[in-house]
Amino acid sequence: MRAAVCVRAGGPEVLETREIPVPAIREGWSLVRVMGAGLNRSELRTRQGHSPGVRFPRVLGIECVGVVAASTDPALPEGTTVAAVMGEMGREFDGGYAEYVLLPDALLMPVTTTLAWEVLAALPETYLTAQGAFDALGIRPGEKLLIRGGTSSVGMAAASIAHGHGVEIAATTRRPEKAGALRAAGVDHVLHDDGGSPITPWPDGPSHVLDLVGASTVADSLRLVRRGGTVCVAGSLSGWLIRDFEPIAMIPSGTRLTAFHSNDAKGSAGAAVLERVVRNVETGVYRPNIDRVFGLDDIAAAHRYMEDNRATGKVVMLPQGTS
Ligand SMILES: NC(=O)c1ccc[n+]([C@@H]2O[C@H](COP(=O)([O-])OP(=O)(O)OC[C@H]3O[C@@H](n4cnc5c(N)ncnc54)[C@H](OP(=O)(O)O)[C@@H]3O)[C@@H](O)[C@H]2O)c1
Image (cartoon, rainbow, N blue to C red; front, side, top):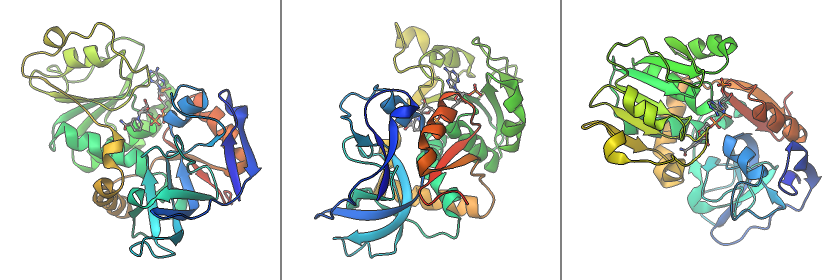
């Protein structure tokens, strides 16, 4: 089979598309024919060598969609459409940048859908994260959500979900030319991220903040959110660690700080959520926000594209090519 192997830590050129053996099936695992895989910022970080514990060579890819080619689990017959995310996929064992992937049965989420592969591939990691963060925020129709890091694929998915639930949305980008894509995703107010605190249209501030920029902005988000509101941190575009974090001083009384990690939405925990997302995409309530589709041979170009922050939404890889 063909697979994009990350041969060592480095730039996009370390992703080499090669012929490697199809993995052998073993008890507790299923062989999946990959039909599509969404690309993620975290794979970029792993490729750069920032994921401790990942040994190269490694086939990256923390998510994929496809069909079961062989399984030792009778509940997963050949031909079942499945999705998978996280669970050390593309880190401890080979992931989705390939024509076939061997995955633990427990990671597989059967999906019933009529969506095209490139659309389905854009959903699992991004929408499970955005939906999980949205649910963690506990936001209701008519409330006011600020999304920081709005043009990231998770940010645009969150905008689409919030829009589908009647929430008023402001979202930040550092590039004003991406405003149109944000509005198309359902954003009501596009805010320029100039590195400072964004000026929201709401005198009392947003009732909720989804912070995907992370370390450098969380303290400001806690200051910005309406007293008693909620900040959910689900991204780390600016880094992982908040310097000198002082909870009592930084979290206003009554304001809530929460987080969401997609590892909590893998396997059986995520299957029902993914079904909900798929139905909402099928009925047009959510938009998949696909920016661009690449073939397996172009995975290095896809990483370069992501690294240059040229995407506005999800970048997808189809192993069978893009035509
Ligand atoms: N909690 C979880 O389980 C989970 C799951 C998936 C992803 N994530 C995290 O969510 C974040 C978004 O991931 P993604 O895959 O959706 O990313 P992505 O699509 O690659 O996002 C790229 C966009 O982020 C913005 N950006 C990049 N660096 C930034 C910075 N330093 N400050 C502000 N904006 C910056 C840029 O937008 P502009 O140029 O328009 O500003 C860029 O186009 C990442 O931190 C990722 O690790 C978390």
